[in-house]
Length: 222
Image 1 (tube, one colour):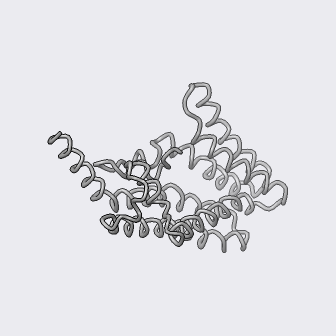
Image 2 (tube, rainbow, N blue to C red):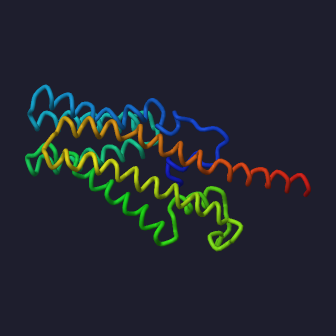
Image 3 (cartoon, rainbow, N blue to C red):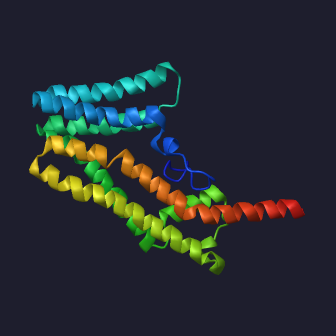
């Protein structure tokens, strides 16, 4: 299972905002469809051209990566989200439903992170153990109590992050505030994600440094 992007820098000595955001290209691919949606809708107040414009931008991003023979996972993920939003909005004739899939996804993510802590299998701990090679059963190790607590706290943070998105966007969706929804989605998208990735790195860096130091001492005495 690949390490998610929000955890990819947890064991790094330095944090890269560019990597957290996916680089300039990743920012453009993630933001452009939503930005185009807002601009076209505000200018036309017409659903069909707005949906076509947003879907076209996402499709172009995928095609460019295919032509250049580059990885398309991030672009395809973005395209899928846009495509689902377009289908739902077109089927219902309501522009705000373009954002329904995203809101539902954030509900599911918030619940998944929260439930993982309650089940004593925090997602942050799971991926951190995978990234650092912690042995099976590390959760039951008394010496790892501090790490477990930190992973639980960071997992709650991610649950809250996704919850904030829902708390802001759901009332706007209920009110049919399409343009405002678009702005909220952009503001609470990559910036909030990058902040969460940084907090995860910051919260775990002391443990990563300790693991690295221990490994180096072991090599020196071998």
